[in-house]
Length: 261
View (cartoon, helix red, strand yellow):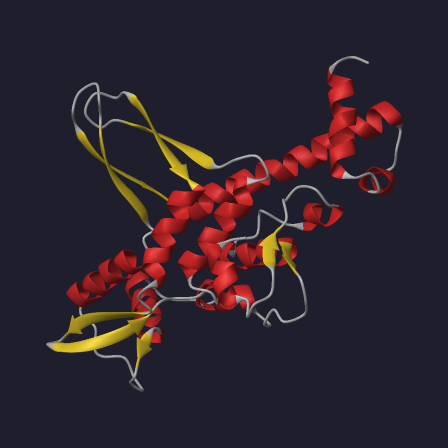
């Protein structure tokens, strides 16, 4: 069970089942332009809990970082404990690889969970902001803004705590608030400083872990489609008949097909 889920599920036993196993997993549209809504659908579809105490909109109410921790756990699947992230050294062009484990992801998020509010000085006065949630992300994705500044102002204004209206925000204020939000939720705009062993150059590695996880899950869905195709082609079973077979037995049949038996 994810530490995040354990802490927030009111004592229920909550976990995430593997994705790419059940017929309903074929109904997820990875082409949905609202990635926040897509994350919510994935987590809600794969959540497993012991009773009916899981709150409505549980995953929408989580901070973006907590949702991302859950999504990465889902993307890791049943057999993986780490992700391998590749990038090219800016100094010598060497291929570099970073290993990011689920334990490291959990540790990063645990530290982020220690602070709920973000304090930033705006116009000479302290202003407190809350962390954005999945609900915020979904609403913003459905909103129409004239430009990036209007979007940033509206989004940041929605996160202000303890006052009826947001303060007047200048460009430097937007940058300072954006930086503070990134520091408070480090998984969201993930960055690492990496030294290249061959040339000694310092590199800043950054990646969108949400997009990374969604690509993995899309591949898992594609593999499920391939599985159905292979079993249907070999045994002439219908899709309904294939999904009536437990996943572990489907994998046994695939092994036999691969072995030419």
